[in-house]
Amino acid sequence: MKYSAPRGTVDILPDSCEKWEKLERILRTVASNYHVREMRTPIFEHTELFNRAVGDTSDVVTKEMYTFADRKGRLMTLRPEGTAGIARAYVENKMYALPEKLTKVFYMGPMFRYERPQNGRQRQFHQFGVEMLGVESPYVDVECMMMALTVVKALGLKNVTLHLNTLGDADSRDAYRAALQDHFRPVLGELCSDCQARFDKNPLRILDCKVDAHHPAMKSAPKTIDFLTDSAKAHFDKVCELLDMLEVDYVIDTNLVRGLDYYSHTVFEIISDDPKLGSGSTVGGGGRYNGLVEELGGPATPGVGFAFGMERLMIALEGADEEETAGIDAYVMPLGDEAKDVAMQIVAMLRANGFATDMDYASRGLKGQFKSADRFKAAYSIILGEEEVQGEFVQMKNNRTKEQTKVAFEDIVKTLEKGLGLE
Ligand code: HAM
Image 1 (cartoon, protein in one colour):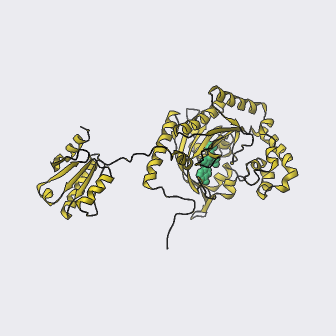
Image 2 (image 1 turned 90 degrees about the horizontal axis):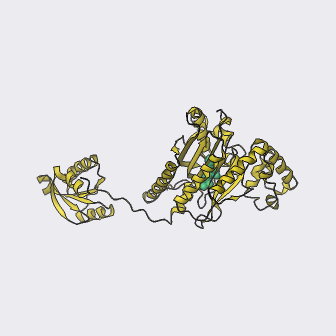
Image 3 (image 1 turned 180 degrees about the vertical axis):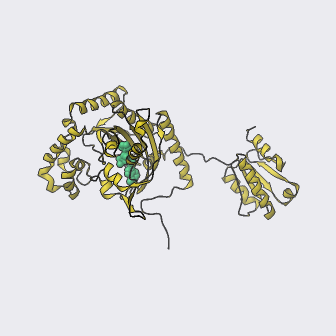
């Protein structure tokens, strides 16, 4: 039997891992620039958490979750997104009681959604996400959007646009919901079966439908902005005013509702027109979720955040300069069985002294071993055959200058330090 990786998953091989590390480094730098600290939550959670948080009318919960019963029959789900786990952990660890009112965290890691795999869409994918909890202020919405845009800029992503909308507060949403039902009721029979189900439960979701996206009723649908309460409108106006003040370009997109149920007020997406991603592709999105923490049993706590799909960021990075693979400090080349034992001890000693070191285990001749030293970009080759072992010395070759010298065992570390300029 031949095994292959499950559909929608990929192996990230060593060369790509170096690019991933580069991406992660850039993201960590932006996070520290915004004074946002890392937080890690479990890869699986109780299924009920996602039903509650993400919402049982969302596609993510109804169609895309990887759910299984554990050995005691409890339903568990591989996390399809990060916000629910962060909000759960925030409540469980009483982070709302921390002296700082605003908690700002980021996370990076795998997420799982049973979707049809295509360019930039996988079943196991990665997100870089940010959550800011504890302060209800349009300034924090803008802090989030600015951070998302800084990520985009730091990665050199071109042709991206910030799309923005507001869903308002609970009262705005109720009024809007009723207006949407009035609007779609006459054409309900022409919409897909999903939309017909959404009509009663969550008519907002109709605007998010991929199947009915081109139905004429979509374009003429009422806009959230026209149903805002005064305070919801003031919040959104301030967000726009702050973005204007910071000279950020954005587009108000009244059909932007996002696919998850926890949002209220500001929602946003960063959409790329990079042909490598497929035009109009969403690289990241987020918004405010003021009811979520309370829904999960915590005190009323506002929150806002966003997440980027890291595969999509990687595709965008692809054009960037190739990373130089870092070389090792020394490659130890034994000739003969006896030399191998000693080589292993030298390797252990060099590693203990902090040098990145490797050796040949394949019993090859000198030529093959020198080729490896070259491929590994080793600064030094350390050669030892029978004569060297007897005499307790090695031949050390500086692979840059090609100079080769005889060095006693006890002087190897010193010679490396000197040669690498670490003295
Ligand atoms: P989301 O829009 O569902 O939001 O996902 C965020 C990003 O994850 C998407 O824009 C996309 O780049 C990436 N993504 C989603 N599904 C896939 C997939 N199957 N393959 C590859 N990439 C994918 C959230 O998850 C929210 N938790 C964001 C948030 C944080 N809102 C507030 N705080």
